[in-house]
Length: 311
Image (cartoon, rainbow, N blue to C red; front, side, top):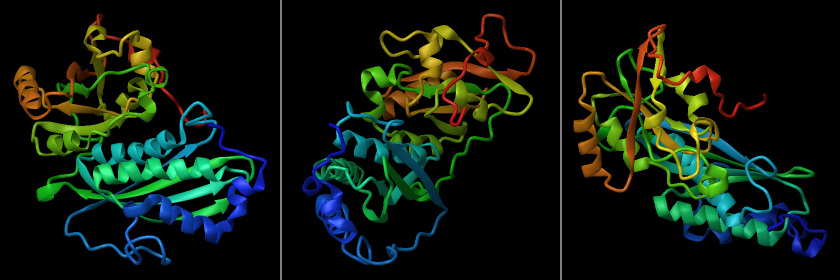
């Protein structure tokens, strides 16, 4: 659906900022609680939390993250879920979201309504309210930015970060990789919130992140100092029709990539995972080895490059 129109009566310009905010509140429905817990005041008032808080932000930009071939509901859903994936990658629990819109006055009201219906569906699915945001003019485009507040998982479990892996640790990844755009996975994926919380409770898991820019781009952030990854091509879980390059470089997989202590038996860990998540695939794709000791049969990860912003 093309998001722009030359008919003023069908565009956001017909409502202006105040009218548009009232419409957004209506479109979101129960996904937006009454003020001061939701839209309607200068800030949303949220209950205090006892543990550590998490904060993340991601946008979707017309022409960059979506185009006319992506339905507006899917655009709204993608915006929400890619932020949820960041919370999952810390083993956390999402609590509340705010959405900032920068819009050309010619954006169709019908497009924007469907976009918010997509946001609301994800809000209800994961029980995360949209508590506020902002609307501004941006001639020539659409930029929607969602900021998500989260907290350490239930029971005050630790927050997993990208650092903490050691040489000898095994490298695991959830799901399958590659072909995200062609398959539509980039706007239909399920954030691994339950899986991330489970991993945070496992003492043998040292470090965790989500694969958003491609495994080749994201794996170095998990790699400990003085080590390098020894990844086996045959072990990469690839989407049907994808080669090794696609699995490493396509990006927008939104799967979890994590390090498990080298002393852990992979088969035992996988059995425990399958009991908890029988429908979510997990693969051990290699291990971290001291720099300069990578086996000759392992992939030369430096030959691959994922998505690099601003390059």
